[in-house]
Each structure stands twice: as structure tokens, then as C-alpha cells.
Image (cartoon, rainbow over all chains, first blue to last red; front, top):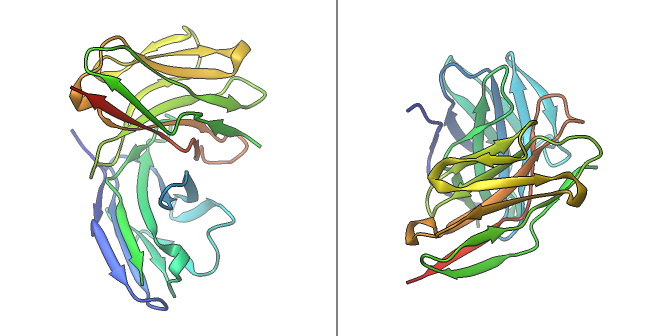
Length: 113
Length: 115
């Protein structure tokens, strides 16, 4: 059964450094998402991506964040200059063009020190 | 704005006992609702969904959920819990005010299962 994959599973970085979180969505899916979950808090929407552009973003997704689909399979989230408060679990998700249900990857735990 | 509330942070049940996890949503029209499960080290796995029609929906792993519009609820149930059901459970609703169907999640309920 196809699944969403994410790498790395855990990333530790120093404050101010750039990080890139990688995702491979399910191959025939058209919509891609990033969510994050700060420890003990809700899973929160960050950004959605369709047709090679951002279609919606939350207020969390500020200028420090960017997303890219550099090729036909990868979907990346870049944080330019990490802050302590960026420490969280980041989930990638994808869905087809017609359905509402999203399929999630296992997440990347980002720790900013 | 839409919201999802899961009032129970942590629930412990004995193996073989029945389970009900509560979820309340805030939305004016008929919501599109989901339950996801997250086992340790795993991603969010879709258990079941409700869009319309029959208010009792069946999912994977023997779970079911009932949509009650009058109570704005979508509670998850299982008649007999197995030790492997220990995980965190998330209720979610599609944000229909957004353009691309992003999800709004509750805070999750952690389920522990006693032998």
C-alpha cells in the first residue's frame, strides 16, 4: 500500500541554522500539506500546496518558512533561521484531487537547541 | 472559526473493555469529520471518516464512530479494546472556509490499555 514517507525522522539543529525537511507524498496525489505539532499541543496546519504553488498558508507560516516541490516526487519544507519555538513534530500529508481525506507521513521531530 | 475539542487528554481502559473517545466540533453546516490514530513512532493513520449519510460509520481495526448533529459530536467507539490499540487518537474536521481542505485537529486523547 502506498504511503507518505518523511526524512529524517529526527533532526537536531542549532538556533539560527537552516533546516530542510523532506517528504515523498503518495505518487498520484495532487495536494500536499505540512502540519506541525508542538509537544503537548494540537496538530496545526502550516501550508497547502497544489499545482506547484502555495494555495493556502496559516499565520504560523511566516517568511522563515518555504516549501518546494523540486521534482516529481519530493516535497520539502525549509526553515531559514530556526528558533527555539520551531521545535516540534512536522507532518507531511497528501491527498487526491477529489477526496477530503489526507494521508500522513510518520513525521520529523525537529529539535532546535 | 471551526474548532475541535477532545475533552479527555488521557484515558485508561482494561483490555477487553469497551471504549468511547469523545470529540465535539464547532461548525455551522455539516462537517467533514475524521478520526486518526498515532501509534508511537508512527504517522497519523486514518481510522474512519464521515461526510454525509448514515451517521454510524465503520472504520478499520474494529472502530466505529457516530455523528450526532444535535450534540455536535463525533465520538469514537470500540466494543472490545486490544492492547495494540494503545495510541493517541485525534479527531479532525475539514476547514471548509479554507480553499484546499486543510484539517483542524483536536488536541488528541492518549489511550492506555491495562492487561
